[in-house]
Length: 117
Image 1: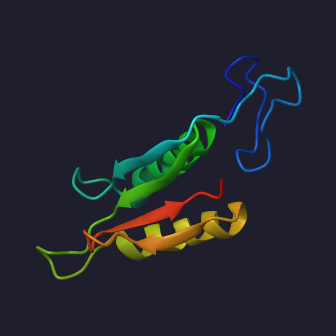
Image 2: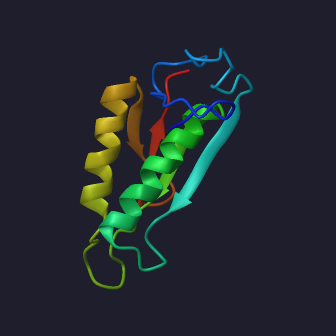
């Protein structure tokens, strides 16, 4: 993630302001969930992983309460290719940023990373 003003590299979990230019870089207005679907467009794991990373960075930057990742559960094949990998990546984000990960109550093929605000 980079500062939108001076493009200085930032760690989205630790900076509220840019250490270089002082620009406010984390959203102060509470926003709902940012939702990203990585299951239904034929994404490879590499593409899905990058989409998830970008979504988490964007959610932290813009003050979202969390990120809902739709990773699929394998309704047509009986298994999901992305599910386990996505959940592992999201657990790492939850630990790193002090958030929490939970299954979506309405979709067995999705998890929500709740960000600590």
